[in-house]
Length: 113
Image (cartoon, rainbow, N blue to C red; front, side, top):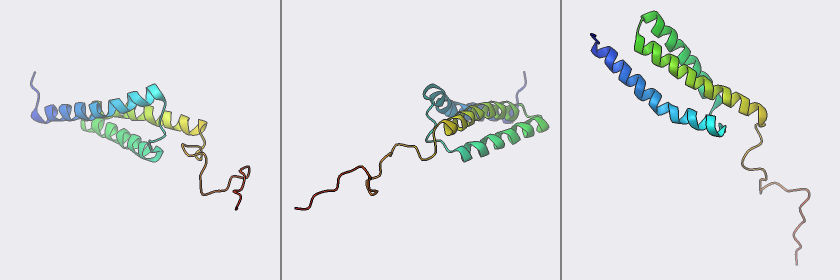
């Protein structure tokens, strides 16, 4: 089997790229916590990976095609989890339910004395 240096480098680069991304996907799938993830960034990333997959196919480059397609799948998983999470949790709902600089209508006023 004759493998070119560029194919070998592309394969190693693809493995490293996916290896760095898998823990994030696993964490999001296990916990369902996607609050810290940017919807816009993952939408753009997913679209970019779709284009890289098409480019890898058109070019006939197996490393580009395979690793872009795998990245597309992983990125799509996070994107779907983020969209589902956005629908179940309103945007204003978060870690800070009560803000101290705003008056609470049910709170008692301090007595000056």
